[in-house]
Image (cartoon, rainbow, N blue to C red; front, top):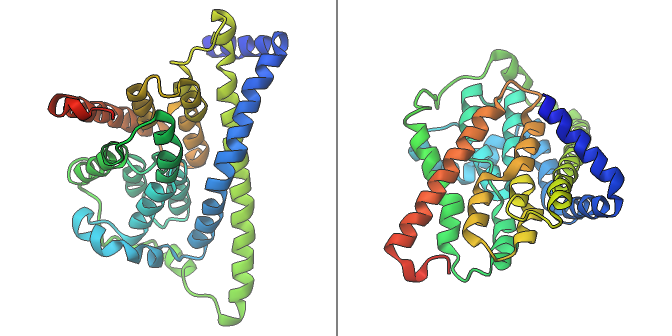
Length: 312
């Protein structure tokens, strides 16, 4: 606690004594939030929030459910969370899991299972920003490292740590009552009410995420002042997007492993999504660490087996 107090006092002192530099880092975080997070996340947050509140998630999952059910043996709402987590990316995975869990549409064990592997960097962000930034020509090996490894990890977890999950578990009676269809004449009113609630909740969440991005970008201020230059190696571990821009294509393997972990800002943003429940952010971090080690093992195997194409 004393160390944390000293850190924030030091950051406050740095902001007061180096206002220009602090403005740069805070502005970088704000710009990333405005240009990347809001356009890519807010629409999905609102739409997913409406679907959860209107109890439409099981119907949306039907697209993928015939494939997922025989392999992972999970319920439709779990399948929906997996779909949103992998397609929409971080932190939508955690947001959807928390929404479903808080409304008792999935169990705590199912929520813990989903958090173990479904809260990753989004594929649109990865393909349109990360790979061009790193200057990589190949695509499939990096996609496998970023998404194939978590999928395989989730498969292994399902038949080991989470082998007790039930595909036929009944929802509590109170939830079943709440899921009953409203009378036809009240459907429009209910839809408007749930849309309004989803928009307010999504705006609150996106504002919180922006605050975390600004704060963790500002932490780069301390090593910059102490060393006289930015500590680029540390930056992705604080805030991943700003850190990757600072690194550029100089350390591609390190950048890819940092992406797998997500950085401190990603962990804090995940906590902001699940902090209102009894889900453990500590277990989430342990799974992210293990996934990062597995990703490192994958790249080691790639280097040993096909060194001529490694990191191309």
